[in-house]
Length: 489
Image 1: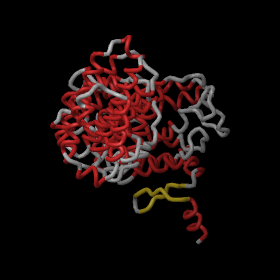
Image 2: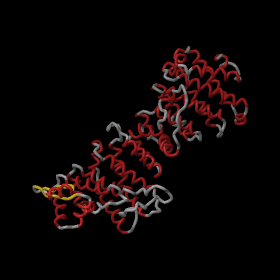
Image 3: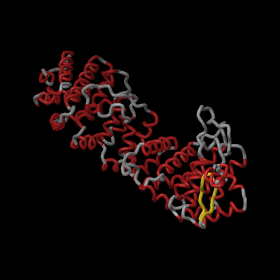
């Protein structure tokens, strides 16, 4: 019957034959032992359907013959999709028969049509994209062929479709085909970069769906996984050049999405080497330095500056990167990063004292983002600045000295009080002071001088539950409990 479909005019009966073949390919034994002529006949049917779609005029697209053509196209592609499940033999046969090129051609023809709501239209699109995904799984030659003939001119259009499933399936084809060389190539011109930028946009705007198709290895591999996030984290993040070009081309809202993906990826890391490259970390540090003053706009309760929100995300990422991750420790020597952080802490601290705003010490957790239920986005910002200073000073004598020279020690001590706008700020301050004083005699002498003069800084330390003790010419930061116990003895 298959050879008859390839030779006769299309009839409704042919649809039943294709459905039977499609269903048969769900059986692994049948799929792996099917005669090659069956696959060749399917390829011939697909070729005839492609030519039929090419000659359909706009006036024909709403007719009965068009509906049958779309149904047959969807079912033929569904059969081809099922035939490729975990079957390299069938993948190679269908590739050699030109089915990849035919499918890309069919998708191209369908994309020329006016937006349609026909289920048959979208079925054909979806099954075509699914077939490309299944034939590419585990097959380097098929991946390269799809990329060479479908990128970049096909994928941007497919990613713009109104059909959520078709867009999701296209994302998965991209993820399957991408490798290191292809990822680097995305940044070579604006047309290719547009695809990468669209993926970031979709991470923000398009919900992920669960794949429910049976007999489809391509989708079983990614069931319940966030494919667009995988494209970004497993491919885009590994290319510093592409990352930088994307970041510079994105608007602030999209940058926030990208930075949230970076933050989530860092939090889920298992292998320290399988994270963001150092060059990207240094780029993000420079972005923080260039735009950090934007956060000062958040002193107004009504402010919703997206550039300021991006600065907050950048600070969170830098705190995470410098938290005992050896790969990122060169950030301690990043030009002027420590100075920028200290100066910014001074500015937000003074801003908080000048008027009551989110940078002011508070006890009531009263600042909310206007029109939202959640807390103000700048909450904990000062605490994180202090955390970053502490991280940059860990075991780094030059940075310890720079904090002293920039009057940063007194500044940190002045931010040690309990502050509901900055939960755990006192703990981060203790952590930072410890790192600043460790094995640094000049800094220890400075704190000792503050203590001997009886200034408020010593009382601040005591309010935090700590004190400074002198022993054998050195200063120690100790809990008050231990001091009291020693006094009792």
